[in-house]
Every structure is written in C-alpha cells, then in structure tokens.
Image (cartoon, rainbow, N blue to C red; front, side):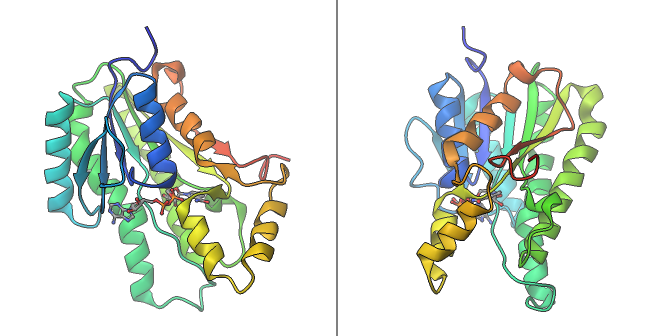
Length: 244
Ligand code: NAD
C-alpha cells in the first residue's frame, strides 16, 4: 500500500501552478484530494473542487466544511494560495501591503483555523505551507512579497511548535522561481520577456526554472508519513539557489 493511500487532502490555490501539480500528484498516488480556489473549475477530476476566497473567512469555513464532508475527514492541508507583488518599499502604498498580506498570510491563518479541528481527529495530520526562497534570500524588487513569505516561514515554525503535541506536523516548501502560469504572466508583462526569462534562469545554479511537479514532489513528501519525524522545517526546492 502506498504512503498516500487513504490520505484525505485539501489544497488551496489548487486550480493552477504549484497547487494544481500537488493536488494531481497526491491524487495519482492514491490520496483523496479536494481543491479550494477562487476559480476551481480548471482542477481535473477526480479532484473535488470548492470555490472560496481565502481573504473571506465565511467562504473559507463553508468550503472547508464541504471539502471535509466530501473527503470523509482531513489528514493533510496544503496552504498554497498566494499572489505576487513587485517593487521596493517605495513602490507599493499601504493598502497594497494589506491586500497581499491578507491573501498570503491571513489566508493561511483562516484556512488553518477552519481545518485544525478536523486535523486533530487524524492519526497522520500534516500541514504544508507554500513559502518561498524570498522569505530568506533577500531578492531585489520583492520587498512586499518577501515580507509576506517571511511571515509564512515564521508562522510555519510557530504552528509546528503549537501543534506538535497534538500530532500535527507543520512544514513548508521554499521554491525558487517556478514555471507556473503566475511566472508566465510576469514574463508577459516584462518589456523583453525572453531577456527576463533568461535573467530568472541565470539566477538559479541549475540554469533553469523549477517545475511545478518538482515542488509538488516536495509537498507530497512533507504531506505523507514518509516524513513522519519532520516538523518545523523548510524544504528548499530552488535549483540550489540558496545552498550553493
Ligand atoms: P498561480 O497563480 O499559478 O496559482 C495560484 C492559485 O491560487 C490560483 O489558482 C489562484 O486562483 C489561487 N488564489 C489566488 N488568490 C486566492 C484567494 N484569495 N483565494 C483562493 N485562491 C486564490 O501561482 P503559483 O506560481 O502556482 O503559486 C502558488 C504558490 O507558490 C503561492 O503561494 C506563491 O507565493 C508560491 N510560490 C511561487 C513561486 C513561483 O515562482 N511561481 C515561487 C515561490 C513560491
């Protein structure tokens, strides 16, 4: 029997990019998977899709309740929904800081709060947060985004400490630049998309962008009993960007 067989997982932001790849990989390996997203329609069967906005507490509670009912319980929460932001501290007004923080940080808090009662009932509960190397790498032009991911990193450690005695493991993945629709949109908006892509690739020692499937592999590992003794860690999936 696979380490994923019978696991019941909820993936936020699971209709695109990293979240979608994670949901599909978990399902392929035998987990039952529900996706929560602003627009869950692109999510493939056999995933259960639920519409919710992680900035809206009521919609999160409603979608989590529906997902848990559909799955018959919950073992794994993948807190992945997130949005980007560019610029230095001079470039974004306060309301933009609040908007991005509301999605990237409070979105995880709301979803986790709604899921914890269900995770406590699981014998192999795990939370995996999608963080970023931006949390610790000091990337230029990413002040707001990096601050939100720094908060996600700290939140991961704090949640791991708070819930370890309840048998709930909490870890995060720290991807480098991942080839997802989001990065596609970023490149399309650049004055010279090819030059921008080359610059992003050159930033990674492997000389290429990380694939969504590679991040999904790390998420699946941290979600499964394969990582049963691991909590309060960040797993880099960054082509060696921070380690080399
Ligand atoms: P993506 O845009 O392809 O997918 C993000 C998904 O989140 C979308 O389906 C979107 O609808 C959903 N979402 C956004 N706001 C939401 C909200 N308020 N409520 C519910 N769902 C919402 O992006 P991606 O590249 O797959 O990014 C996923 C995560 O990975 C994000 O947390 C991001 O910060 C992180 N990340 C991405 C990269 C990268 O290079 N792509 C690198 C490091 C970390």
